[in-house]
Each structure stands twice: as structure tokens, then as C-alpha cells.
Image (cartoon, rainbow, N blue to C red):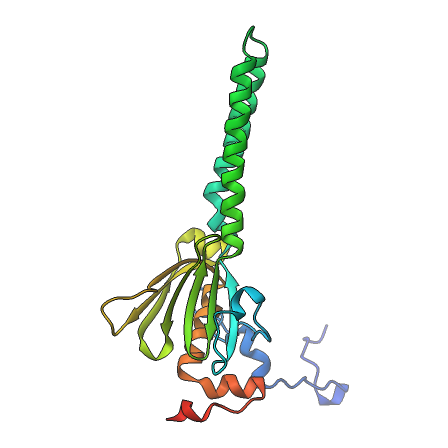
Length: 226
């Protein structure tokens, strides 16, 4: 007759491991599978780029800048790829025809024009920045004609972000900011990356500026407590 198996006990030299509550934070999930543990915020940037530094004044503290998600370029890149395929096929077809050299030249010129437009859109995306400081949020865009839109954090009455199913898959979203004023220079910002972390980053700056300063190892501005 065999004896029933039993879990090892103290007499067998087995010591059960001990875990602290903090070690389980990342394992807790809700009914949809989303983690319930503490969420991270985007890391703080040290210095602004030269593109952004010109728009900051000495008494505000730089918190970070972000380019829009690459999906912002989806339309021009798709048009560029389609133009390359279609005009390449058309050029090959015309090259086989008699007295079609003029049409081939036109097709090449059209293709160069489309690709120039695509390059312009890529450059515009690169210089387009969403900026956060301890005083305001800004959007700076444009290559030749620069546009700067900003909203003071103190005037933001409501802020949300929206994600489509594709946005959830690719991790981008649209930010919507509401202000107490009627006219808003900055209300909707599309295709921002890491929307959840960026949302927490902005909200922390609005409601817990002391926590931000503590992570930076700086003292809060005297005027912030007023």
C-alpha cells in the first residue's frame, strides 16, 4: 500500500518563500485584462531641442516634447507608394509605344512632383512638436510659415484623449483640451504617441507639480503655491 502524497513541511527542510505586496502589483488585472498596478508616466526630458527652446521663456520649466505618431504620415506615404507603382507602370507602357517619349517625360515629372510633396509632408511631421512645460502646453508646426498654439495649464478645465481600435493597436490617440475661454487656439491634437502615459504626464503637471519637482530634485517655484 502506498502512502498518500503530502506537501512538504518544516520537517522536510522546506521553507516557503515570502512575498511582499509590492511584488504582486504588476500581476493584478481587471476583468478586461488591463493591469491594476501603478502606471508609469513618460520620463522627464532634460533639455529642449533648439527647435523648441526659442519658444520658452526663462521662468518656465521644460517638461518634454513629442513628435506625432508615424501613423500621421500614413496618407502621404500611401499616395507616394501608389504614385510610384502607377507612374512606373505607365512609363514602362509608354516607353514601348512609338513617339511616346514626351508622355514618359511628363509621367516622370509628375512622379517627381508627388515625391516632393511626400518629402514635404515628412519634413512637416518632423518639425511638428507637442510641448509641455510647468506653465502650458503648446503645438508648434510648419516649415516656412511657423504656427505656435498654446494653452496655459491653469486655464484647462477638462482634458481627455480618444483612441480608435487602430489607435489602441498602434498606441496613438487624439487629445482634446477644454478651456474656460470661448476662443481656443489649441483644442484638438491628433496622433500623439503613448496617449495614456502622456495623459498622466500632463495631468500630473496640472495637479501634482510637487511630485514632478521632487523627481527632478528641484524646489517648486514660489509662485506655484500662490
